[in-house]
Image (cartoon, rainbow, N blue to C red; front, side):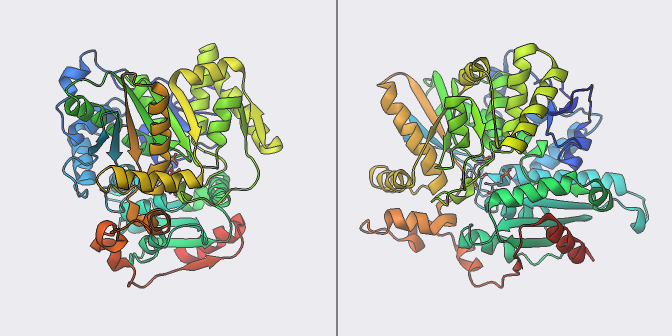
Length: 500
Ligand SMILES: Cc1ncc(COP(=O)(O)O)c(C=O)c1O
Ligand SMILES: N[C@@H](CCOP(=O)(O)O)C(=O)O
């Protein structure tokens, strides 16, 4: 049975949206995020019937539970999935790598831009194209629906969105990134793409400024009506949906690799905007036997502070860390989890919407809100958290390289590995296996990797880490448009101008 009625996290009234509407709108008009109010449940014998499926077959089975076949037929969904993952370099799409008996890495960086975002954004790009082609079939050019995708990035979403959408018919994409706060390779990936439908805006400010501007643009009814704004950030439900597959796939891979020995499985997820780990929450809620989901943050630790104190507080300034893609003050996707936590208290969807709307109004006016002890206790049934400092990131990269066959971690993955290792030490030999998500290829973050490994004898970034494809980017011409004011009106004007 599929779970097809989507609603907004901030709606206090009966609210039902189709999958297509949710994907094309991105953000609800009340500022909330779309969610399936009922999480579908797995078939009772899913372990036996699903454990030997390929990545694509699993993706189909999972997505089928969330998308009505009257919206996308079986054949169409299979075709979308197969097209999306044909661009990956690894036959398993997202393989797992054993580090030691208790720790596995889930490698999510085998897609076109070497980051976990490709798993969702290759699919989202094809989905946009599918819906638009269907809508626009047989319409004269001037009546065709055109989508203007506007996204904010701290480096990885932008490149993955651009590679997912470049050259797509009837879609233009605008990516805002904070000037000087992304790595050189990330900027090269985004700005060397020559397709006419791709635009990048380098904004003087932080990622949170960019994310805020994007949300303001979604809230601007007139602009939205004129340009049909679409979302590629994880506020778009399709991102979260597509990311669920690798929790299932890695669970089954782990069962095989460990000879069915992995009884308690915990996923550790380097987290910023809370999209990646939220996909794991849905997998767990559907019935995947995950013991815990562990949020690993860098020093921008709003999520870790929340789980420890119950207060969701923006904090002071964002800190520039060695894991820049996670330098985020407000985790926009956390709102989805908050809705389920609020609903668990009363069982009432409408009441949950009113509660979440109030929390976010408080966040806007006071910079924080606090939830009850009961809600925190509920969150802790599924989640645990920890924060990692820059020195620990460097030490983890060095230690992993030296101890585990020269395996090179990217700094975000190192945040997860550090948290997993601390948990393993605390478990004191207990039978728990950790799968830590490897969210980017180390080549994307040469500064952090070189800082950790530069002094290690025999190490060479060029020879051991940098793929030829990324090496070639450095000599390509970049198109950089600087925006020296993090201001929504300035950005809107730039978008209008470029669309002309
Ligand atoms: C490499 C990398 N790791 C981790 C994260 C955090 O993921 P999320 O924002 O889904 O929590 C990001 C950015 O989102 C990222 O680019
Ligand atoms: N770390 C992200 C920030 C945007 O997050 P998203 O997952 O909501 O798109 C990035 O790399 O851009």
